[in-house]
Image 1 (cartoon, rainbow, N blue to C red):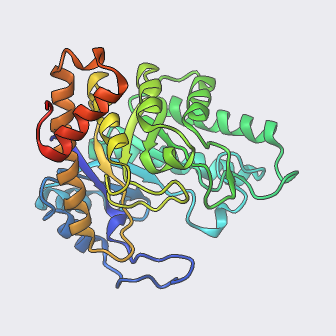
Image 2: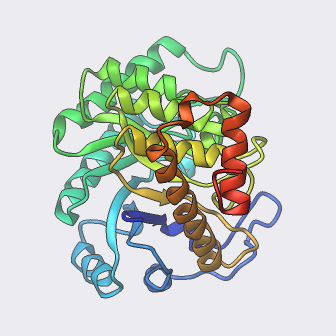
Length: 325
């Protein structure tokens, strides 16, 4: 497969609410890139603005990535993981916070152009509410539309990919489904506003990843892809294909059938696993189901089968290496 990426946060400390210091030692950014460069099958990495890359260190980051055979594929704009965003970012009732979110995003778009990256990612995890009667929903939604539109108009050559999620850190996030991203993108009136489909977030939202990917793709709004897995209870960021094998295959089938040409990027957070091994296992699975998806695309009789026969064909191909009895 081509265009396989990884979020560099996979090499984080593995902190959670119970082990705040993490299960692993801190690894500096430069060392993370070096380790990612040794992952078999990996071509690119996602990095964060302004902590990983910014206006001051952009040339150093370019050289570091090149030295390790990696491309920058997406910039994550950091508007979540700091207490200053407690009231939200683009939807905050505080005008200064809204302006800061807009300014940060515009700066990230500038850096993206210098890096040759066409997409910035906005995960709006602090834009939402914890309690009923806490948020003025109408005003917050309007602020969100206006702020995203302002960024989209700033550099139309850069795609703004919004990563939806049901919850975290806020108990209830505003942009919590593929449909909500689609509504937001359409409300801005800008073609360069679309979605990041995070498989784990889709599962948490009780979506079928293949279905929502198809809706977003046919609407021209699927800009980026995060691959991982979970049990639907929480956003566990487990190795891709470790839980939901058949849904993962169906997702790849429809992505290929509908001509998705973006990055297949792993969003993993292996708390107690080696990040390189978790990435390589996920990539091996991706390559395997990609091959089966190609076979399905070339099987003219598949869609004429009954549902049971389709599942039987897939089982035989996946588990016994053959598509026929």
